[in-house]
Amino acid sequence: MTRNVLVAMSGGVDSGTSAALLLNADWNVRGLFMRHAYQATLSWEETRDVLTKVPASNEFDLYRVDQNGELARLSWTAENFPFCLPRDFASALDVANFLNVPLVLLDLSIPFNAIVENFIEEYYAARTPNPCALCNRLIKFGLLWRVAQELGATSLATGHYVRKESVGNWSRQFAPGVVDSNEEFSNPPEWLLRDPSENFFTRSPSPKDQSYFLYGAPRSVLPYIQFPVGEMEKPKVRELAKRIGLPVATKKDSQEICFVPDDERLAFIKRVRDANPERWSALPSDSSGEFLSLDGKKIGEHHGYEKYTIGQRKGLGMGFGERIFVQRVDPVTHAVTLGPYEALGRSVIRATHANWHADVPMNQEFRCQIKIRYRNESCTATVVANELGEIVVRTDSPRFAVAPGQALVCYWRDRLLGGGKIEIDD
Image (cartoon, rainbow, N blue to C red):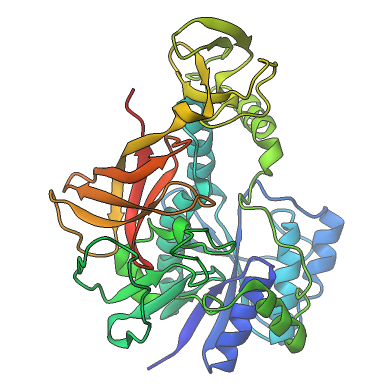
């Protein structure tokens, strides 16, 4: 069987090490860098300089996904390139040259707009967006897998920190007492598993487990996905990269959201709105409103409800003389309700747009663990799912700062069952 793998190479140490490991395992490796219009770029002069570094012995192809979703190969020269290169592409090219593997630059600017537009729409709908989970579902494990097949790959690999096991290879001993029942779920061909370093008894989250963001990956794609560094801890990955001599061994990790730093989200939204006012004409031109107490009394004013998310304490724009947290955000009245931390607790959580990696029972209770945020600790809960993609969770202990738009992710022991998008009913 042909062992052709396409490795999503971001220019970082995780994906670079993944490519090296696959080469060592005798896979035919081809790298792919995903470009979109919101990345930091090189100048034209720097772009030409980078392109001249492509050795004649190494293959570098340029592709674009057009507005119809079709893959098109583009011709290029260093003097006539269609856009300035993303800064991280230079690192990806260095890795490809070092490993002597062909590299594809895939321009995803058109389909990636859906991720950015959803990001903005969620904020103005008073939800907290989760662009990484959406991108994984639509782009990395959706569109990219189709592109990989068109390019002749039989497998797709990423540098995610997540483990994968086939049902026939159970060798792990699971910690007793993880869930309160012996519920057995029918086994899919492949399971994704969370980081084994997560402590099931203190329920402290692992610092590098990325399974939370992969709940939406299509189940049908899982048998064809590889996570070469998924069993490793980050220090070991860097140590291996240094030993191999990868040029990105000491490169710093990028921020979670690839198109905007955390502290620039609102400025980014304003720039995108100002650049295309017709596209965003339905959004409010004035999003200011009132701060309310839990009993509905006005206690202040704010300059934009989209600046606030449930559970937020800092950056409220004014002092209240006590520790106070955002409880609710109303996109219709623009009111932002504030209150004490204790009032944030919820024991019933509803989610929609469910995606399951296993055949969980429909319309009947089952027990599992859930997470409501990437950095949030897990807890045990009773779950009911239905055929409409709805999930209702009753947690054994209250969860705090449950924000609509975030992901509700379910685990059975350390296996990723699936999850959905949190909705709040007030």
